[in-house]
Amino acid sequence: MLPPVPIHGLHHFAWRCRDAEETRHFYEDLLGLPLVHIVRSDHVPSTGEYCPYVHIFFQMRDGSYIAFFDLGDDVAAAPSPNTPAWVNHIALRVGSIAEVEQAMARLKAAGVEVVGITDHHIIQSLYFFDPNGLRVELTAQSVSDEYMRDAAKTAHGELALWVAEKATLSRHPRHEAGQDGA
Image 1 (cartoon, rainbow, N blue to C red):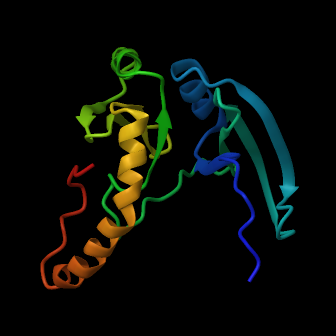
Image 2: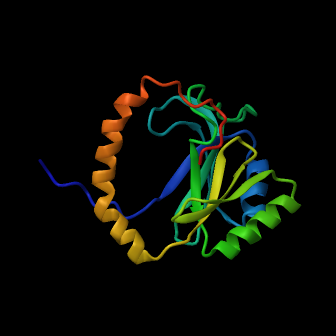
């Protein structure tokens, strides 16, 4: 078997948006991510199907992007009916906990409902939904890089424990969708 190709990082995360301008305002004006590229087409390049769209890209400081598709029908992506709202999200890294606090103040001042700041032991996080229903997390690492390197040494063993425990969980009711567990 051939070895895996080295993955250098995230190029972009794409999500459907209801309205490209509303999304631009949120990501560029509120979060400070510049709109840097737009693709407009009537046909999907990978499948050839007819579907007029605009694909908009916002750049993060590390060179990666968050991108959105506006399909021209004013419809946002539907949440998964079998997944609690807190599970599917994109986490964006900021430089410090003070910056998480600053973002929280800015978002609240703009009328965005936020949850946090939440202590996840290795990161401190703020949660909110964008205009498309995508849950966004702004997070800052709160432990040393050495701590993270040490944690990596036990990650496989901890996963094996979860896999063994998971079999017993199937006999218990699942958490209600909408509980804020993360």
